[in-house]
Image (cartoon, rainbow, N blue to C red; front, side, top):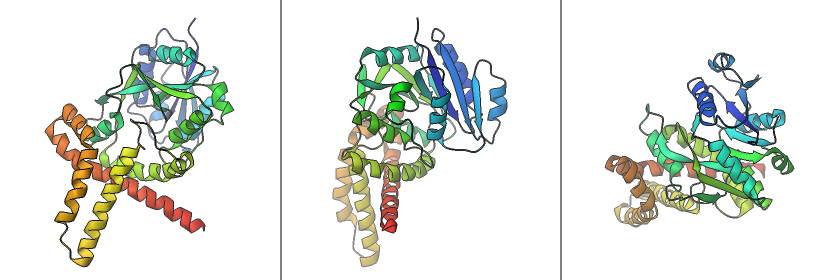
Length: 329
C-alpha cells in the first residue's frame, strides 16, 4: 500500500503554469495516493479562476500575499497526511518521483528530508539571460550519480514528515523571495538529520531573467549572512551560498574598489585588475566549462559578465545586512 502524501503547492500569480503543474503531478504519480493542497497566496491574476475548474484538489485562498514560507506552513497545518511534499507552482516532476522520494525518506531514520534534483532544462524561452540563471541553479548536480547529501531543504520539490517538521519548529517566513530553505535546512542539520537529494527523482522548471535574479540575490544574501554567521560554515556544492561563490564575490568587490580608486586617484587599472581577473577565472573555470558544454561559446563569454552581476548582488546584500546591524546600534 503506497504511503499517502499531502502535496502542498503555494502559488502567487501563477496562472501561466499552475494548471499544467497540477496535471503533470497527477499524470506522473498515478500510483501514489495524493492529497493536493493549493495555497493561493493572494494572487491578483487569473489563478483562482483556473483553480476553480480543476477537480480533486483542495484550494485555500489567502486574502493578502504572505510569502511562500507562510503559505507552506499554512498548508502544513491543514494537510491530512503525515508525509508532506512541497512543490513550487512552476515545477514539473518526473515519473513516480514522489514514490521514489518516499522510499528514500523511509529507508533510514537519519534522513530528515528528501528532495529531487533539477535537470538542466530551462522552460523560460522568453528571456535568454534566464539560461544563465538555469546554469547557476543546476551547477553542482551534473556529476551526481545517485544521491547526495545537501545542506539546504530543496523546497522546489521535497518531502518531509509533518511530525518531524513540527518537532523542529515548522517553516519560518521572511518578507520577499527566498531564505526559508536555508533557515530550515540549518535546523534539520542541527537536529542531526540528513537532507538527501536523489537523481532518480527530478524536475524541470522556469528560471527568471538575470535582472530578476540580481534583485532576488540582494534579499537572499541579506538573510543568508545572518544564518552563515550562526552556522559558521557555507553550504554544500549546488547551493547558492557556497565558499566558492563567496570567494568569487570577494574578487568582484576588489574590482569595484580598484575601479573606484582609479577614478579618484587617476591610477591606471589594467595591471591591478589582471591578477584578480585570472584568479576569479580559475575559480569559476569549472562553471564556465559547464556553461560552454550546455549552451556553447556565447554563454561562456556571457557568463563572465553575468557572474559579476550576481556577485554584485551578493555584495549589495551583504552591505544591506551590515547597514541594518549598524543602525540597530
